[in-house]
Image 1 (tube, rainbow, N blue to C red):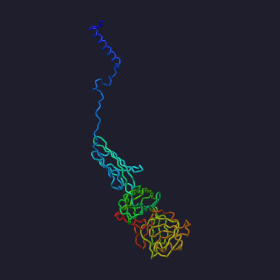
Image 2 (image 1 turned 30 degrees about the vertical axis):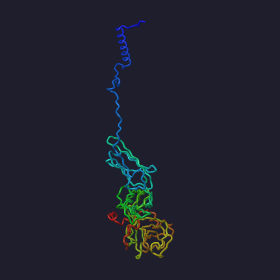
Image 3 (image 1 turned 90 degrees about the vertical axis):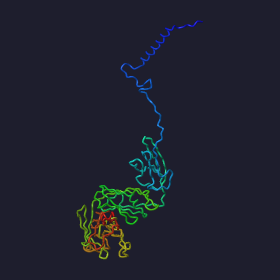
Image 4 (image 1 turned 30 degrees about the horizontal axis):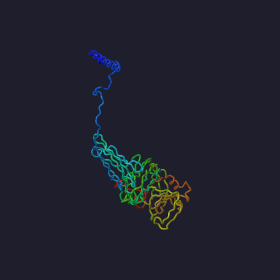
Length: 411
């Protein structure tokens, strides 16, 4: 059989027709007049997307955590530290075993982090820290540790009470149930702030009592906060604080009462204005009343006073002393007196060192001078005794630090 051939000229014509059809199809599918050309590119060059190899370099930043992961019996102060080398810290998260965060600060240069305060005892902590190198590559580290278990703990019993309204002479006072040897650490765990703000300073008496006051009496209306952050504070070797609490109190009107032992009178000043002068009887010549500024620290409608408790043997034992307000720890009160003749008050000093005001037995008569003064007095009010033939009361005998100058208080 003879093959059917195609003339060379005919083959060329068919190829041309085929090319024309392809071009026509391309034109039909292309953009209309006035449209922009597609952003893609057939040649893989201009306008195309290029892919570079992933950055697989390891961060040059290195995070270090002290104490090491898994450590136990860690000290609550001065041990926890996070550092970075070859980069800067970008995040540090520390939490206790209850999920509560631990406040801290990354240093200005980004090379270190320290907690803002001490840690608690008998607690497990987790640390998660991240650092970045100059190229932004991150490096992280995780650690867990637990703090020391104390052999003993301490707490502070405080005055005044939370939510109370007090007089302008009220000092913040704490008595600790264990002797304190590391006083600076304990002071660091106590913060007293006031609004309006005033500087305050602390003074210790012995190893268990601390007093905090401003330079002058509080201004009326001042709001004061005592913050106790003693958890984890080592107050003595192996003895750690277990107390975290805020106490708030408000200073009421200003009341300062001046007792003149020689004139047998007491003048009550409120907001620097005399509102009443009351006849009194202070300490007899052989039992004189302290001079000085004394702060009311306790109030009792009726209380027992027994001479045996303050070194006077059986000289007196009165079961129902009315309207009694404590001025010193050693037993000085300002109180009602129903057993002395009314003529005593304003004329003679007959007590065992207290300041007495006329009263009735049972404290039931609101019209007596003692009842009036009791009703107009707050814990923290000042009773200042002058012209007594005795020494000035010791600053630590009650809340009576106002008898020291500010330079003596802060020495």
